[in-house]
Image 1 (cartoon, rainbow, N blue to C red):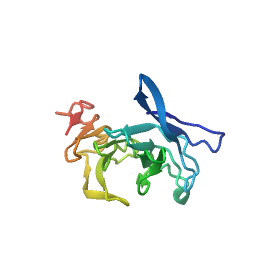
Image 2: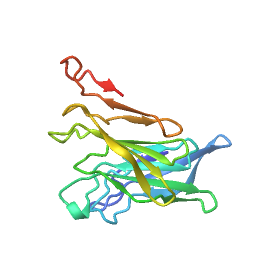
Image 3: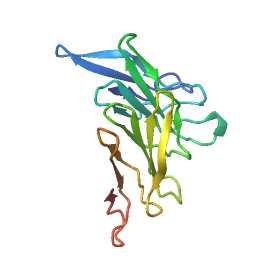
Length: 193
């Protein structure tokens, strides 16, 4: 899969993502371009800033860390949108709701399980003075993305817990980093959970 941010004419740049499949030693695009949707947002200039593809290549999570929410126009909440490929129509269809960051620039990383039905998101809250970072896990129930359990948070302010996340194939085990964690008083030694 590949992405292009800042696609379009300012101020309505929205980015796009393309997914390719290897067939007969050639890369061929499957489905059309997945474009950032301006509905509900002032812009999506970083749509495609990061992507996560399921093991079978049929589900993709796409991040935009600076989408401006129209309801809070002064805040770049960031978004995660998930799409699934349907071979019969050769198209990508959005799954469930858009997942919004709670505060400025919070959604930095996400990973899908092998089947694309589990999603882990990490928000390291680097731009927040009092941010510890947090991680959330979601399951797609066929209609919406349901949050599973409580949010996991970093141990200390500034740890950047959730900067990088990974999810096992079945979606039941998660790995999380906190690269700015201070070990034995030594800053930025980092930690993994």
